[in-house]
Amino acid sequence: MLGFIVRPPHQLLSFLLCPGLQIPRLSVLCAQPRPRAMAISSSSWELPLVAVCQVTSTPDKQENFKTCAELVREAARLGACLAFLPEAFDFIARDPAETLRLSEPLGGNLLGEYTQLARECGLWLSLGGFHERGQDWEQTQKIYNCHVLLDNKGSVVATYRKTHLCDVEIPGQGPMCESNSTIPGPSLESPVSTPVGKIGLAICYDMRFPELSLALAQAGAEILTYPSAFGSVTGPAHWEVLLRARAIETQCYVVAAAQCGRHHEKRASYGHSMVVDPWGTVVARCPEGPGLCLARIDLRYVRQLRQHLPVFEHRRPDLYGSLGRPRS
Image (tube, rainbow, N blue to C red; front, side):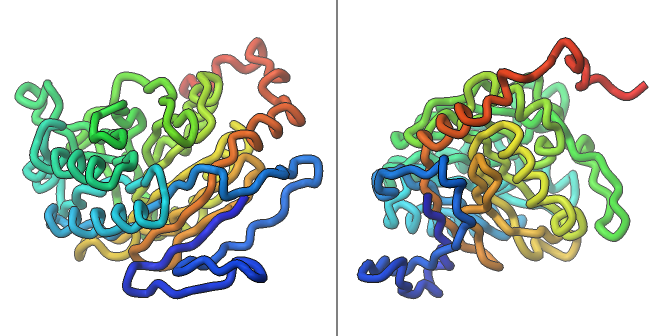
């Protein structure tokens, strides 16, 4: 299993992957080796390739689209069959009023541009958190944080509306009250079959709730995706730890596209987009700043690991089936 780091297009260089084999414009993230019993003998080049995009969204929707489109086209050029964009790929506003003003329905112009982009590039797109005016917009004047999955023909294959809203006050990071402008989604989305495997859709703050990831894994997910915009305080403390924990406990790949850098005078994000394999190893990671990283997804490894370590067969829901309830 190989993971790669890809730098922004204007910074791409050539690196040696191994003696005698040159891969242009890619640098390699050296992952820790798997246990010997877990090794896969087939060539990694036969495995599907995913791209994880890292951006710095602003309130300028068209400039954000231009940046995302450049990364998606680069992902397609490098051979990826699915590209992941982070939460708020469309924009990050300065306040709830601006968020509501800039939001659009799924049938609006912006999603139409991404539909055309998916068709043009011939690859699937995970649009990690679209500010959606739902059918109840006129009544509620609030939106949904919607994860949209497009196939390579630009068709909407699945939508998941974020179920856990981030209403927190972290010292040093400033308050966040997502519910000021956003309605929580009513349900989870069943894992979706894609060219890289069955994907379970989630968004950012959802990663703090293992019940969600376990439910998706039990429903058949092989890959969990957490598009995010983590803060500068929680990021260094919790980001990688949570993603690796979700991968280990579900025995799934975890793909996490992230916002990075300063969006405007009121907000900044941690970055560090990454892919984690089911053993908990970070196999690809973005460098600082906008760019993308690549990783190959090995579903045979997922099945082999689950056979060697059959934790789902050992679970005792009779003892802890009510863990999702609030503390008394």
